[in-house]
Amino acid sequence: MYAHDGAGWHIREFETHDGSACMSIFMACLREFPWRGSPRPYVARLIRSLPGSRIWVAEEPSAGIIGFVTLQPASAYVDHLFVDEDWRFCGVGRGLLHVARESAGRPLTLDVDTKNTGARKAYKSLGWHVAASAGEPGTAGHIRLVSP
Ligand SMILES: CC(C)(COP(=O)(O)OP(=O)(O)OC[C@H]1O[C@@H](n2cnc3c(N)ncnc32)[C@H](O)[C@@H]1OP(=O)(O)O)[C@@H](O)C(=O)NCCC(=O)NCCS
Image (tube, rainbow, N blue to C red; front, side, top):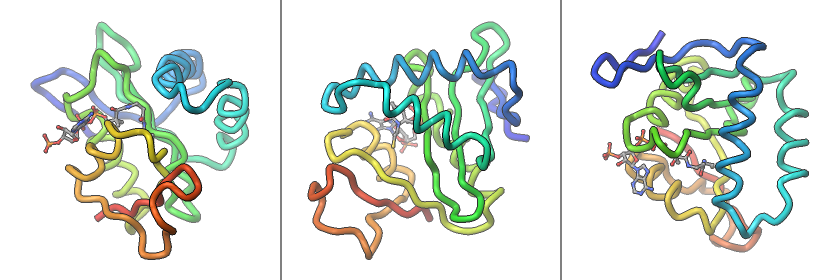
């Protein structure tokens, strides 16, 4: 589907047995967002979103699952994009978004926390821009972005 031959990882559709690995990455990433407080509502939101989502994982033969993305296909909305900290800056996020964009067939949208400066820089590098309909950055704690 999508492979990075140099780094050895590839992207494939989520399978049920990937659930706990994705949840581990998710929980570890949430610890990087101290402004969010308790992880409980975010875990509940992830679980709630799964039935209607397309989900892809990035997998490396030794490390296992190293990242995942969830997409609401009807709205081309990316609910979740999370990459294991040890595998960042390797193109995994770019690859996952590429696969989601190809599947959606139109520009994607997502909401990024205003305080999530790392992710905001990543989206900027990937050519995403602030949605015309978005309010002033920071008004609701997040910013709506649109992909190329
Ligand atoms: C944001 C995130 C998904 C990016 O994943 P990644 O696999 O590291 O991204 P990539 O390696 O594909 O990088 C894509 C581009 O963004 C840049 N980039 C990625 N993270 C960056 C950062 N923290 N600061 C500056 N630039 C960054 C890369 O250099 C690359 O740009 P380039 O091609 O011009 O060099 C990852 O940092 C992550 O999971 N963060 C924690 C969870 C999170 O914030 N998710 C997003 C919620 S909206």
